Amino acid sequence: MHPIVKLQKDWFKEGHTTSYEFRKEQLQKLKKMLNTFEKPILQALKFDLGKSEYEAYTAEIAFLKSEINDHIKHLKEWMAPVRVKAPLTHAGSKNYIMKEPYGTALVIAPWNYPVQLAVAPVIGAVASGNTVIIKPSELTPTVSWVIKRMIEQYFPPHYIAVIEGDKEVTQELMDQPIDYVFFTGSVPVGKKIMEQASKRLIPVTLELGGKSPAIVHQDANIDLAAKRIAWGKFTNAGQTCIAPDYLYVHHEVKPKFLNALQKYIFEFYGEESLLNEDYVKIVNRSHFDRLSSYLDEGNILAGGRVDSMQLRIEPTIIDQVTWSDEVMQEEIFGPILPILTYDDLEGIINEINEHPKPLALYYFGGSEEDQQKVTQSISFGGGCINDTLYHILNPHLPFGGVGESGMGSYHGKASFDTFSHEKSITKQTTKFDQKFRYPGSKIGLKAIKTILG
Ligand code: NAD
Image (tube, rainbow, N blue to C red; front, top):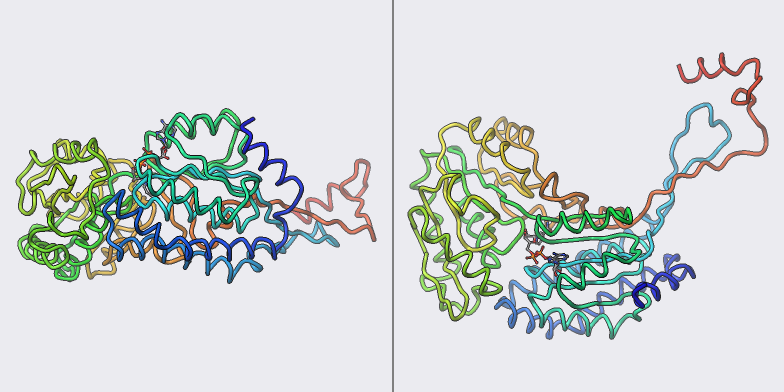
């Protein structure tokens, strides 16, 4: 066994993580750790991804602090056993569900929000009483280094440890007797993780990606739709799992919408976004080259320029794109927005349903009937009506995918539940013993038929 896995499993069995007081204290420590390491975190995010202080603080540190506060506030209530009702056959007994930690959890993180996505699952794992091993992304090495240092300063390795490295390290960890795996990353790697987990029947949460559509219908508030789509798409230079990947625009409102979109891109990033210090870069050359190749397709309406030294790509809108273009074959994960035009809502619902279930979907339109039609007839992880990304910021909404975009969910109580096994208990009375269940009971079959129908 890997020495850290053995250390954690042995320590877990000693029962240190059971009490409410212990878990609350660890959540408070996590918050203190984020405060102490705020500056190194912001610097590392700037160095690896070119994130501005505003984007880095709001999407990574503030998000985590709010998640920790929510967990501290509700911890006692979430930990409490849940009493349930029982049928007449169980008269005299008490029935309840205990929330039990799995043991040692492995959190595998991607690079796009490298602090948030490495630490947010840890909050749930700690609240539920697990020990945790974090495997940060190797593509943001400075952030990975900071995560290791801050965890080591605040937590002993038998409780929370960071193991840095690439896919070989991840595969080695996946061969260990881990009790729960929480993976955030791409669909192809998610499939490999699930395959490896199946060998030991390790339960998994898979937070994956895919192509998330946004739809702008003819009765939408066009200006606001353009503003919110520009924000949702180009934040983090489009390297957001729930960013609108591509756009369906109703042909009647297309010119007005595209004008407004261009206006907001300039307002947010300036006419020379490549020179804007706050505009995030592409994580590495191979992603930069992959994204740049899309710029040969369709008709570029805005943006399209690149800085190959700084790995920056302008916020780009590409028109006249079809489903057979390369840009529509896989998740874009960059600041390029292909536009598809439509006349008939029914038609695009069918088109979306012919593709893998998206992680997110955004519908812009005024009619309640159409809003319901879209949300009821397309299966997707989660999303917004008349907004983008905002659903992820509500801790009362579980966040996760469905089908190819993932399985399981987290944030708020969903995080606590994800890292807890629900153990069902019947506490039977010894004051009396109903006879009907035993062989030879004269009233047995009749009683069961009466009670159970
Ligand atoms: P990735 O799948 O390449 O890597 C994720 C993690 O898996 C990394 O820690 C990496 O070291 C490890 N890994 C890579 N290849 C592996 C292999 N063959 N075997 C075992 N482990 C391996 O993903 P990424 O490029 O870091 O992140 C981008 C992807 O993540 C996008 O698809 C995006 O949509 C998705 N994502 C999803 C969410 C979500 O919450 N659903 C959030 C952020 C990113």
